[in-house]
Amino acid sequence: MRDESLEKRLKSAIRNIPDFPQTGIQFKDITPILLDPALFEESIEAFTRFAKARDAHKIIGVDARGFLFAAPVANRLGVGLVVVRKEGKLPYDTHRESYALEYGTSTLELHTDAIAEGENVVVIDDLLATGGTTEAAISLVRAAGGNICGLGFVIELEFLQGRDKLDGCDYLSLVAYE
Image (cartoon, rainbow, N blue to C red; front, side, top):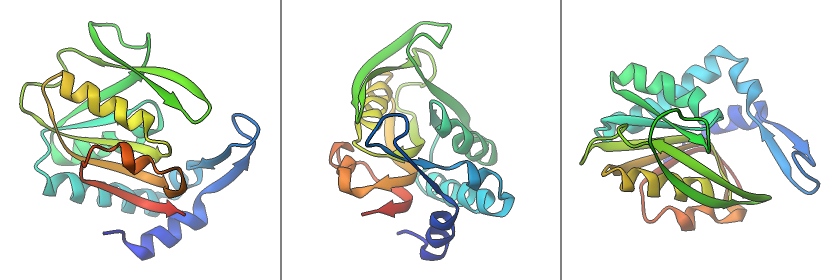
């Protein structure tokens, strides 16, 4: 269940950048949230409560803005932080998953030793748009033997129906745009 007070304050902080990174894309800039320590703290707390309630053993941050929210959550819970990076950024053996973006394609990677068989994992990212990135992250976790126990997003663009690709996973979005 979304915290309406937090959502309202987050929406007032998020900047809309038209035509970025391509014409027709309305980019949601979260950097003003990071400039407001109290608002950033509340966001981290919401994700921490969500992950704790799901008995997470690991927190995944998705490249790159997901790292900003996932790292403090993992630290507070005393669990490992796993990074899912764009192709070619991780130095060790990886699982790979390609996916479609709203404006192209990309590939994500996860170290093959980052998640132990049966570990509960919460994936945190800044944005749920078409769901391709999250769908790829879910596939990577499952390929590594982990269980998705939750997904967290700062922003959900509901009109793009990305939740349809979440494969029934429990999720929290702090802000939704219809």
